[in-house]
Image (cartoon, rainbow, N blue to C red; front, side, top):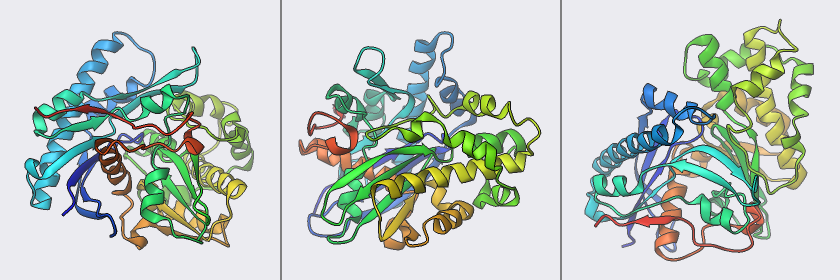
Length: 370
């Protein structure tokens, strides 16, 4: 029987940690034995959000935030193993993404950097399981973007020979995986996902997110504002490309809105939702005419976003990954379990055609439990 791996993901949305226990049989579908979601404590959430921007005493605050996140991860591991009826001894390794607080590939000195906060040694100590983390930096060292890393997993999980399809992850940031009918793989970040929608909802509704997209659906898209946002240079850059809160943050939103001071809050939300789907649909059709689009991440649970994607892509079947056996909130965590397995087996985890790296590389750093 194949070994078990735990995958841990805390994304740009900062809503919490998703943990899975997964098995990857050679000739059978991926098996997810259990999934656990652990909400992000408010204090840690605010600290991590603040670390996306320059501030005082960053090294100290980042180190303590990494410790706190590692302990949160360790609690999620314990809970998901209990749900699966497994013990730490049953798990070969944990694949842990960490929390991205800066992502600046290729900038400043030609290499740039990407920073995912996590104390891998502490997580290994508290869980009693080998930990693989820091997946992105090896790709950066080879000249790549370090993101997105999930297309290789999406291909392993969802690709069908002869069927052109794509996977859209609507997390805090949106990214596309392009699975060509002939087996070729592409992918890139295509713009904001839920990050700006959640920010606006928290500011004006006092809730963490727009449940089902109901508030956005109640508003009216403002065409001029939408076109202003779509003029952002990132949308017009060719792949490989990746982004994050380094670009799509509160100041980006507030600066742009200064020219539209009288737009109602619900109309801003409606226009932000339209930005998310328009950017994704346009990017998709520029690179692939798929038969179907599989959607994962929290945005797959947003009925308004899903409806708008279907309207913008009338010749494409738009469905949640749940329809093909993997619930949308489990996909990314399972991807990092898969990347941990690749590391343990000394197999490359990146795709140079996606990230722009100079070649295939084994990703991640290993922190042994003992």
